Every structure is written in C-alpha cells, then in structure tokens.
Image 1 (cartoon, rainbow, N blue to C red):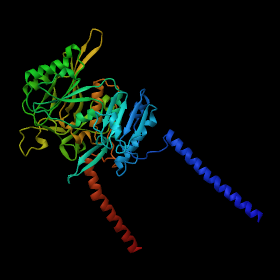
Image 2: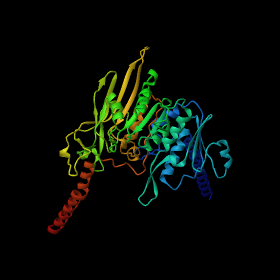
Image 3: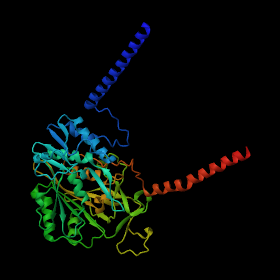
Length: 478
C-alpha cells in the first residue's frame, strides 16, 4: 500500500514538473521570439521576410521612427497578401531599436486623427513619423492591382516593403530629387513611372512644358510628344541642361511609334548624337520576344556596370513598340554617347509605310540596334571636378507601362531605378521588387513556351501512351 502511494506521489510530481517545464519552455520561447527572429521563411525569394537593403537602412537609423497601423492587430486576415503585408510590417522594429510599431484601432480611437489633422486617414492606413516629418500610406499603396475581365479588381503583387521602406527614407532624408513630368505637345502621361518614383522617395510633379520653370527640377521626363517642340522650348531645355555652367541635370526622353515629323526635337537630339527613324523594331528570335509578340522584344545589357546592379542579371528588359534609333557619333566636342541596352542581331525594322504583306525578310535594316542610350556633356571645372548633364533616351515609351514596371519577370523597374539613382548621385536609394505570392513567376521566352508546349502536349502524352502499350504487352505475353 505504501509503495503504491509513493508511486502515485512520484507520478504526480513528474506530471507537475512536466507542466512546469512546458510553461517554462513556452515562456522562454515567447521571450526569445520577441527579442530574436526565430521563424524561417521557406518560400521562394523569402517573400515574408524584409530584404537586405531594408535591414541595412534600419541598422543605419539614428533617429526615432514611429509606425502607426490604423487597424487592430487581427485586422489583416482574409487574404494571403494582407497576411504577408502584416508580416513585413511587424519585422521593422526587430531590426532597429529606433523603430516603434503601434496598432491603432481607428474606429475605437478616433482622437488619434487629431494628431494628424492635415491627413485624410482611413482604416488600414499607415502613418510613418520622425520628428515633424510625416508620411501617409493608404492601404491600397501596399499592393499592385489588376482589373479582371469581369470588372473586378485583384491584387497581383505586394509592395508592402517597398512602400514602408520608402516612407521611412522620406522622413529621414535631408535632400530629395525633384522630377518633372512634362505635359503638353501630345506627350504621354506614363502614370506608372512617376508613381514608382514617388514610391521611391522622389518628388514628382506634372508641369506644362510651355509654362514650367525647368530650373526648379533635377530631372525632366519627356515621353513621346506627338507635336514638335517650339524653338523657345528647345532653348529652355538647353538652358536647363547647361544650368548656368553647373550642369548636373538630367532629361529622360522616350520615343513612340505614333510620333510623326518633329524637326526641332530631332535637331536637338542630333546635337547629343542621337537620331530616330520611322518604323517599328521587331524581333525574329522567339528567345527574345515576350508573349509571342515580335513587336515586344527584349533588350540585352551592353553596359555591364548597370547590369551588375541587378539582383538577377539574367532577367530580360522589355522594350515594347520601339522606334529604330541610331547613334550619329559616340564622342564629339565634349559629348559622349553610351549604349546601355540594345536589340539583338536578330532584330529588324518594319518601315512605317510597309505593305500589309511585309515579312521579316523584307527588312532593309537589321540589328543590333540601340535601345537605351545615355548621352552626356562633360566639362572640367576650374577646381578639377567633372561636371555632367545627361540625356537618357529610350526607343520605347512602353518601358514605363505597368506591364513592364509591375511585371516580376522583367527587370525594368529595378534597372531604371538603379540607373536614375546612379545618375543623380543618390546614396539612399533602395530598390525593392514587388512580391508575388503566386509562387515563382514562369518567366520564359516565346521559344521556351513553344518547347514546353510541345513537351506537354506531344512528347509527354506519347511517352505515357508508349508506357501503357509496353505494360499491356508485358502482361499479355508474360
């Protein structure tokens, strides 16, 4: 009897010790989880983890940053993209002691808006504050959307890290680059690219090309105007790039296939060593086309320095609906023209007046053709410093279309941000790709798609059929 009681007591003590150990281990795990990052992201590209650029930025902070999320902590359910965004947001305080994160139940605490009377706050928004500087992110700013054929809108990618990191940069940066999108003269609006610049800590304004004061800006965007520039506008562009002898300015110009004769603009570009012809660039190699469309070619990297800035230099650069471009010279009178991207030797030009039965073999001009060039004027100042202004010229305005900038299979967004950041001398530039939760995008060329189609619809069924015949014959004559 006594032995039985001792055994029962020993068993009870062991059970109590086990319970105590479980609570102790859970408590230690909770404390460690609050202080250290113990979870592992096994998704391709670690889509639930902030990137190295963001971590480096957070590690370098020396001023307090407050992040307010206008939602209760459980308000990010119902969508994998919402869960991913919350996961990204929650990591920011872990990588910097200067960052604090607070979830605010906006419905239960309407007095919070009194702190930011100039902001039109809504449920789900984010507010980033450092001292007197404030950035407001709407919930929709955390994602890229697309319209479905039935009229509904669907999320195609998350930009939670890009938006939040850029907001932090905005409240801590002392100097920001001023960019002007020039309107008028039939110029395209190119909304996607200015929005991307805004998201990456540039100040972007849309101004009329006739009345704007160009000297107020560091960069001008002129996207495929269809009406020729007046001589006065050309002189103002020249004065902008000269900048009273200080240079340091950038003009980004893109061509479009719908442009007609623009003699004043053509003369201006010729001074910088660049000339455009009529027609449209096509690609004959399926390896270098997008979605089987010959007029949606990809360009290859010529300047390795900018290609090496890419996280994946094997990703193509998309150049839809491009005009044929030609370099008049590469160096003359202080001007230097550098090809950054080019169409391959299998490309060609379809003339604007080509007949309907035109084929690739009828082309009289073939690649390689320049696709993106940077022309600069280089002046040596009395103190020995090199002063430069740039014109970056693209054969395609389509490089700024959403299909190019928001496509995770091409490098347009990352390459253009890296190029502009380098030319403007920005040291605080953080280039963050949109994140897709649909798994790794099948970024293949037209030729690869054709081979895959042959394998899946032809070779594989034949192999299965042959295997079935083999099994039947084996059983039949065994």
